[in-house]
Image 1 (tube, rainbow, N blue to C red):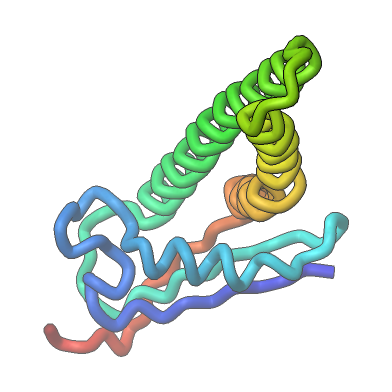
Image 2: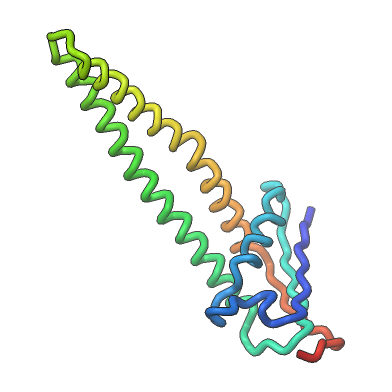
Length: 160
């Protein structure tokens, strides 16, 4: 089955970022991500961009570049989360080892025990919950990058 996402561009800045005319607006990228979230694995995706205003840029290439940029941002965030997970895990393990090595019955021994388990729990929380949404976003962006993009110009262009 083929899923179609169709957008009508009535104004140049409906599609293009108003502060950087070489990029697609963040709202438009988020719209494409939202619309393609529920596409199944075997479905094909087609994006149709109907231009109803005067835009000189190649919207297809601009969209692909912006999607690649968004994908790279998501990968960078994933890398930062991985580093945070490793640090939390190491902190947790070191705290638990220190807890095991201390023979005296002092209050900060219990703090090390609780801190160690919290560090390990936070690492698991990042892996199971925070990263899942980013993985889903990267999967959706990959689907958008491999989709067919059709740019059409309508004869009934609006003045503006």
